[in-house]
Length: 399
Image (spheres, rainbow, N blue to C red):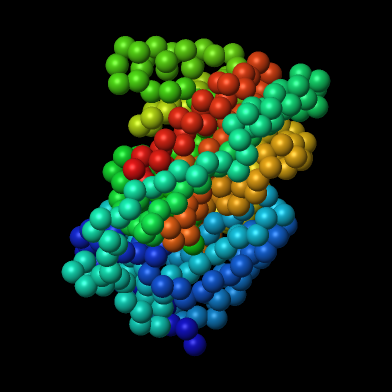
């Protein structure tokens, strides 16, 4: 029988230096994992969330839990594809993990596994890694501009209200990219974001899809973007312009409606901010609206994520129409970009973000992603520039 031991510990030193295989860093919870005790391929279709949760629940129930701490048994990392037709959705239980909830720290070990070696014994990346080399996107910029123009035309004809179109950017190097170096840079530059490493997907997302703590849930919707400026007066002007932009407010309203509709059906009490606020990141600022609620039942964080995904912030409105247009116009597979990513525990609590500002890593190859919401009044050139600004978040970690 699998034996899982949960132990309260003192706050450890620099955990990234121990080179964890799995990482989740957020203001509320941080988890560092080593090795794999369980890997579940969730497969295809909308039921992939349920399959992953059921497999994790069955494995947890069959294990012996030694739990002197306050955690609900083992934790699992999860990362799902944007499209139900895409392969790659996965749930992973680390063989050893160190978990921070608030100010409390615990270790979780499976069958006696040890959390990472101390820094002086861990493997390290080359002292002088090769520079990143940019190989371009899946489709040329001009073709992506044409796709945006097509989407605008269909929106003007009333076929959709909003469509989010994404583009990718490929990088390569003569030496493997070091994920720990990238995580360290992302965590330093984006301290308010959800920094993650799950099965080759690495990033720093600003958007909370859902957090569940008992019956309490939280979500934050981001839609509508503007650049930042080093000049304070100019930065404030850009922010005020965003807060009053008809195009961006309409884009944001669509995203709010999609989240509010789902959570409104599942909560006995749901509150949201009356007006969008500015969420300022290092290189971009967004319109944001936060939701807080109390669940009617005991729906898990993973099931909530499955119900919410894809929000209009990353898909569009109506959902089915927007999804079809994305498949027709993007000319690429998003993979796990813009899909839910985060962690869950055996009690159903968890925290999942939308996988934005991220890259797929494979040795000396990387694929970066960024998207833009298209609504009536959008300009193709402006949407392309928005994706370039967003791509800089990950590019800066590689440079």
